[in-house]
Amino acid sequence: MATQSTEAALQAVMDREAIRTLPVRYCHCVWQKDLDGYVNLFTDDGAMSTNDPSLPRAQGREALRKMIGEGLDDMKPRPFIHNHVVELQGADQAKGTCYVEVHLQRGGKPWEMRGWYNDEYAKVGDEWKFKSRQITVDSFAPVSGEK
Image (tube, rainbow, N blue to C red; front, top):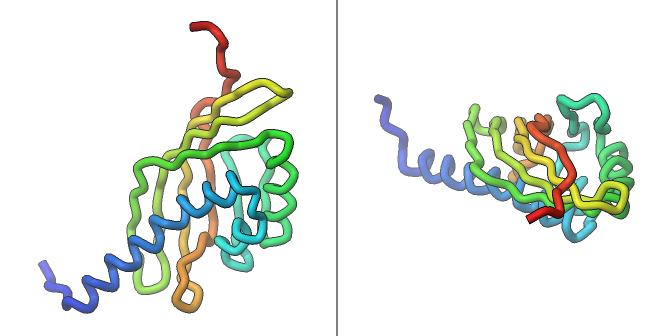
């Protein structure tokens, strides 16, 4: 096994921590309806897509702003991120997976969505950003009022 220098090991830890913060900041921006903060988490050509053709897709900051802005007021999404796995791929690229639960409104009634994000990250200057996020929806259903 190759031995990493202390400086390289420290940089890898700092990069992983910066990347792990991205999905947390993403959720915070959605909760706070912070569209500027949301789009600034992405590279200029960043993209969002899904495995569900009924859900919107977007590429570029203006398209991302429009997509998320349209859903915030109507659906009131409240995302929660779990189990983030990060794989560094050199000094300025990485990929990762994190799992998500989203509580939201649809037609004025509570719904839940569960799935995971497959992310690609890029380091722009000294800041990590989303290059792409692809969400795989595992389940999407109304919340039952029965107890």
